[in-house]
Amino acid sequence: MEKQHLCKILKNANKEHLYQYLVVPIKVKGKEIFWKVHHTLGDGNIDRYYPYFTSSNKLLHITDVTFNDKLSIYLNYLDFEYLDTTTRRFDTVLGEDKKRTHPIVGNKGPRPYLLEDVDKFERLKEIFETIGSWTPIRDIEALAASKRQEWSKKGELGDRKAIYEELIDSALENKLRRFFDGKNWGNNVKPFLLSCIMEGSFFDAIELFESIMKMELKGGRG
Image (cartoon, rainbow, N blue to C red; front, side, top):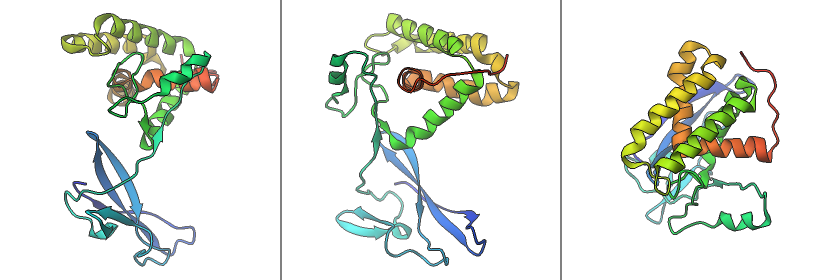
């Protein structure tokens, strides 16, 4: 853990006390995640029972954790597989690096996801619902997947990464730009979608929401 921030959140239902939590940035396998660790009781006093971590075989209260402490933690993961054939269940095997080979982005794909990535899938779901149709989403998926497989070696784009990103950026503009407000699109939605396509979660979200959950999209803008 590199640092921690003391933050305040909203008042409780009785509006008598302010609950507080510590936002703890933790680096896991090169990825930074943020945990909100509550450390006060309803009366505002410090909770001395629950918020403890193990560090070098010692128990540390969250308020005593300091810069660059190494914490022993058990992470929660999220994974899924669309069983369109009975043999597909064998694809859920993890490699030596505890990762699964992604069918499009290769050995450095995002599966299994950290539980904290649920927010990313919720945001993708909201974007899909705003678009209101699977057709343009599937068009983007088909182009991104086919060109990645054509231009890469086992998912690695190498010196073609910049060209690939330019192609996807242009496709997003042509297919999805009309569904979003200008400023929100350029500064928010498009960079997020591009990032999800590059790492692979965009493809997984389509599999989850359309193929597995059978989510229907109706309406949208444009």
